[in-house]
Every structure is written in structure tokens, then in C-alpha cells.
Amino acid sequence: MTGADDFFVRFWGVRGSIACPGPATVRYGGNTSCLEVRCGPHLLILDAGTGLRGLDLSLPDGPLDADLFMTHTHLDHVCGWPYLSALNRADTKLNAWSGHLKAPHTLESVLERFLKDPVTPVTEASLQADITWKTFQVGDVLKPREGITIRAAPLNHPNGATGYRIEYGGRSICYVTDTEHVIGEPDAHVLGLIEGADLMIYDATYTDEQFPNFVTWGHSTWEEGVRLCDAAGVGTFVVFHHDPGHDDDRMDAIAAELEVKRPGSVVAREGMVLRP
Image 1 (cartoon, helix red, strand yellow):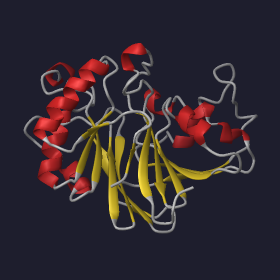
Image 2 (image 1 turned 180 degrees about the vertical axis):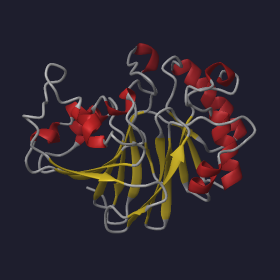
Image 3 (image 1 turned 90 degrees about the vertical axis):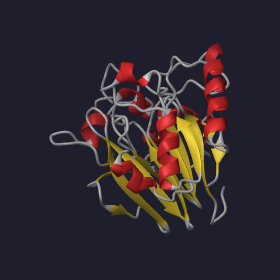
């Protein structure tokens, strides 16, 4: 349980593209994107990658009442969805939010594709949870629970994606993944979203050296994250969505370079808890 004014993020999955657990990634983790954000008594789940299983296992027995916010619906961000055990409970209440999909697609129609024989053990027939599907437009100010304000911005990613700014108790956490920058042109949407934020979690899949080889893939670099944070006056910068090809030693090297360029910044690890 958390206090009424506690506000933190816990990292359950920090990788992008594909899960890569194993001895080479044991220190930082190999699961794909999933964050737990606690706003006092309220639970927000950001994305549903393979890290969702760890979050699921950590939840106490009893009814789940939570909000799921999806940045987008590429496989690495949704493949944990069928393994949320609360889907099999009639007392589960889940609000599922998205703002990136265009007709005829909806979040419900996309996630239902994972609940069909013979793909997963959880099917539409066994689904018992009370799910409310909520679609918003970028620019809407969302109030999912008492005291929580969420703002959203469009991200530059194939098929679209959404970045979030979560505000609670006078503090703010921004979650900006997956997005591709343009060299020398800071993204105005991102800058507006993160302005003055206490903590920003950013897509740092590549390095600036690697980036030219992956233009149009929809991802950014830790160096661009530094530039954005400096320009927007962000407090703590968190490197996230690690390339599955970056093993622990490579991540250690990035962390060392990051500390030189922006002291106090953090490279996300599974299990890490940060408070803004």
C-alpha cells in the first residue's frame, strides 16, 4: 500500500522491440515496456509488454481497480496483455485508454486479437473482467482518478504513438516512448509536453552514432533525450526502451557517458523505483 500523497514509478519492462532476457541482460533486464505508476491509492499501468507479467505477480490477491494507458499497440508493448491474470476475474475493473489509433481500429479490437484460439490461453470466452475502453484525442486533458491529471502529445512513430505527462500532488512524470527525432530539430510536441517536468522517461533505443542507420524506424537516442531535457528544464532524465542488442556492459558504458553529459540522470533497470 502507498500513502495518500505518494507518487512513484516502478519499471517492470525496459526493453524495446523484443524481449531479450538472459545472462547478458540480467543487470538491466530483458522484458519489454511496462511501468507501474502509483498516485497515492491509484494504480496506473503504462503499456503491456512482457514486463506486465512481473507487475501481475506483484499485485495482492483481491479485486484489481486500475487504469491502463497505451502509448501504442506494436507487439512489444502489448504482448503481455493475455497474461494479466485479473482478466479472468469478474471483480476486475480496468479502464483502458488510447489516443493513437485511427478508424477502423480501436484499442478493444486490437487487444481482442490476442484473445483468440489457438494463440493464447485466455480467450474472449474466458474473459471476465469489466473493461471500459476509453478513447481520447491528443490535446485532451484527462482526469482518470481524483487528483490525477494526464496530458498527451503525439509522437513520431510508425502507426502513431502517444506520450504522456502524469501530474499528481504538484509533481510530474513524463513517459515519452516510442518516438523518432529529426536531427537538429527538437520535437515541439515533446518539448511542450515535458516543459518543467520533474522526471522524464524517454526512448533512448540508439546512440547518436547508430541513429543514421535506423532513420524511419521510429526511435531516438539518449543524447537527444539529454538535449530535450536541457531545453525544457526537466529535473531527472531516465533512459528507457533499451535496444535488445545492448547488453549489460554496453548499458554500463552508456550510463557512464550519460553521467558526464547530464549528471544525476538514470538508466532504467527492471525493478527500479523512482520518485519525482
